[in-house]
Amino acid sequence: MNIIVSVVGITIIALLAYITFIQISEITFKKKRQRLSLMLQDEEDRKPNKIVDWLDKRGILDYVSPSFIMSESNKYGVEISKQSFLSTFTLGTAIGIVVIVVYFQPIIFIMPLAILGGIIASNIKLHNIKKKYYQELDNKLAIYMSSLATAMSTFNNTKEALQSILPSLEYPIKNDVEEAIIKLQDGKSVKESFEQMNNRYHQKQVRLYHDQLDVIVKSGSTDVTSLRSIAFKMKRKEIYRKKLQVAHKENFKTWKAFVVLSLSAPFLFIFVSMDNYLVVMNHIASSIVFGLTFLLIFITYRQLEKLEVYDPTADEQVQI
Image (tube, rainbow, N blue to C red; front, top):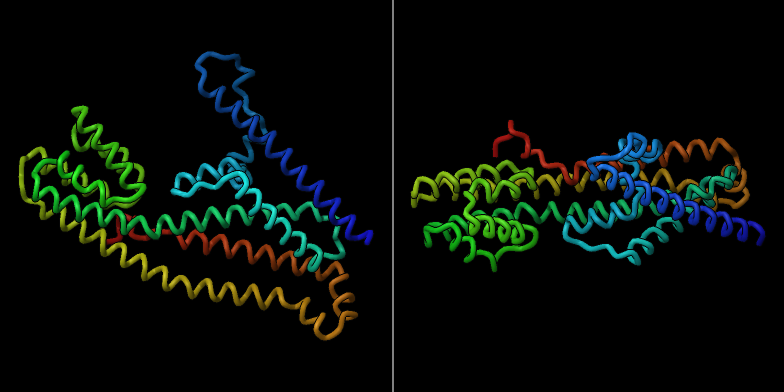
């Protein structure tokens, strides 16, 4: 009973410490932005907080910041509310508590580190949002390109063609096209109107497509063969990415098998004998072994995360 009370007490302290740290970091980060926005200030005011600056340079501040995770999810078309973030963080922290109780009994005093479970869970949720966004983006871009090529051959007018395809477009492409239409109506060229969209997407076909569209408009040509060709390549790119995703699922299956096998040892000891479990898991050596195991699991998962959203066709040397 005393152990349970201690665990709950330490967990509450850990959560309060995390919330306090985040609040201080957020306030300091806001002040830093305000200082950068002012032209005239004292030299002393321009110096950022060293701890926050160190965390920011290494990307750690973004990794643990709730506001960053929520703003990033909005960028990828999904809104994470504070309640949703808190529930995910709480669930992850609860899993962290279970992990420490099961695998790190000799060093139970590290219970405050259970908040790492909440941080990891929140970032996994953000990664899944990002992964789905990229999985659908190529298809949306391919639809946009092929639709505009057809509309250009019909209307032979950029603004009318863009207006006609708007109902068939989805977020975020629809927003980009609406912005481009407004710029075209303001008298800007096709190149200027789509520059922001070109910079937003790493797909080299996007810039190439708009460059060709600019040439067609300036020359007054009605030949949209080049636009259709780029749209076709974009469609092939979508198929290529899906094939990579299917192949990548095998890597995740291998990773999951490794996780299950490496973390099932304590439960095997419990199945054989509770005494054996207590003898083995109460030794500091077991904590070191499982600490290294969890570190390896985390590192390999991070690499798999990067592969899931990696686009090899963005490389200029890759031809599709």
